[in-house]
Length: 112
Length: 114
Image 1 (cartoon, one colour):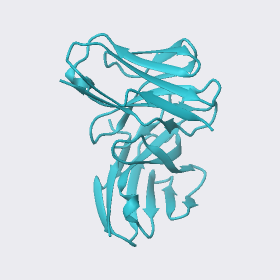
Image 2: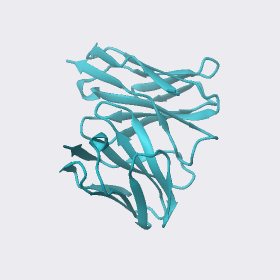
Image 3: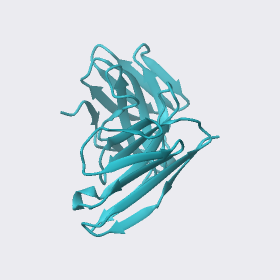
Image 4: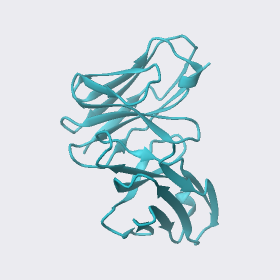
């Protein structure tokens, strides 16, 4: 069975500080990977997607970057956090041509 | 421009009643419509989905009714239980979407009272 693990569970960071969030998928070879952002009580906005190692596409510009250093790993980062970065970050995966998107348990980010 | 709209924003029903959650969309190329259920502090989980070639999809107490002509769909939850209290997101994707991209609505927060 496939499992998706996100870390950390929660972060409280200062404006201007760096950030790195991670996601690992086990049990699925070469998944499509996605980062979504959700404001408190809000909808889900796709940020990045990756079809293969080393290749990441940006969907919206939010002063964030993403990387896929390994087949099963997806990293979201920024060098300088903004207040507007606060929210719930969700990693998701999809298998090949399948349409179902599976989400991780998310990381709650609070920027002060 | 919001491509997927949901109503109501919040809904309260009593245990045993049928909850009806509505969704509409604008992009006529959308052909896949999943509904996700999200509990507080958790990631969304796929509940049920439908493709545009069908007008109804049933899974236990959950049923999607789909009207392609009017670009509307609804999720019916029969015999609602307190454990169904969650936020429900309607989403859509189609041929012109970025690979694997789902466009989500703003969600309907459902509260089921015992």
